[in-house]
Image (cartoon, rainbow, N blue to C red; front, side, top):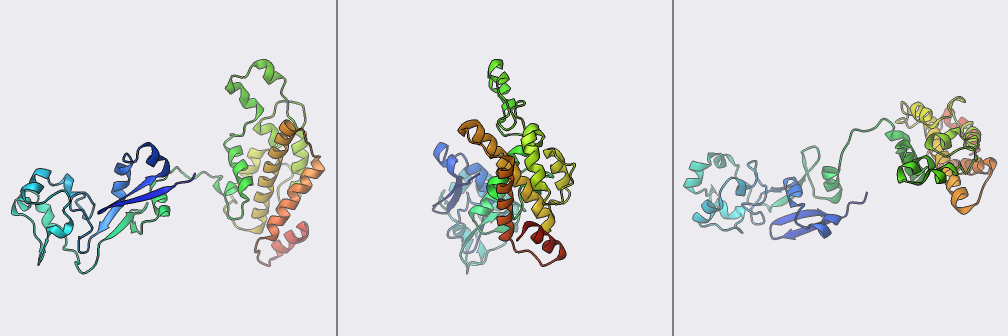
Length: 315
């Protein structure tokens, strides 16, 4: 997901908008953004007295009525500096009676300028940046146990995307066509483009299909995968407990699984739509060459395990 951010400064206001929201409803996101924008007051010249968040009481417009504001000679454009006197706050007596908590607000250091900060996701304050905005506002969910199987520091992005779709069973396989209101006669004539024995599905393609099973066998023997683990769910379950480790052995296993998944899906589509085909031998060699090239780019420690892997992969 790309989060395009536009910062708009108008007087003492600073508002951030998501790119799509600017087009659809440029003002509608203000209520979401405003609580994250905190003003650290100095001389108070560039901070709105009523509409910016600059003290623990929140926005003064929620504390003091506009009638009371105008009655004391202030306007909607008044700044915090207008509330300061020579020796500190210059609160109107009526405000202190109605809202005694304002007397507890610390007097700022007027020798420095105001500063705008962003409330981070951990409730601390930090510099305003697009990355901090994204971390504070992005949707969050519990981390899944397969996260490091798919996304790890040495992953190949296009391979990881296919594995991510596989884990969620979101690849557009033939068995999903029944949900698209495709006629039964059309579905019945479909078959796996790799083996022609049945409709393809996530389970069939990875790796119950005779073609993909042969490819997986030829490639996985260059790693520490047990010979009996041939179904993609079993492979995920095998990798999950160790996927967070950065050992060369684990990295090789994850690279092989991701590369095999990617090229099997690519071969399926090439046969289905382009009428081109490669043998299991050719596909296995392409996967091995891709993983080997990736391993050559990694900085690996000189250990017995690494030396064994390098000899196995002829690096």
